[in-house]
Length: 87
Image (cartoon, rainbow, N blue to C red):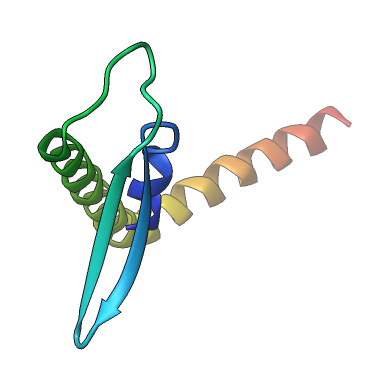
């Protein structure tokens, strides 16, 4: 949720409070940029889209971590080998 709120900097501010076993997020539209103020429904929709995007990014990163680490190890290993051959 923090990443989504960060991506709304300049568009809105947010406040998160805990209410029993739930979290309540209040969004407040900021000073308009380029003359456009988002309605509360537009702001809510944009925020929820950003939260969904961040959730997908986190799941993909988690599921591909092993493969990503192998690719990085091979790439940096090849780079180190090339530097050793040149020097």
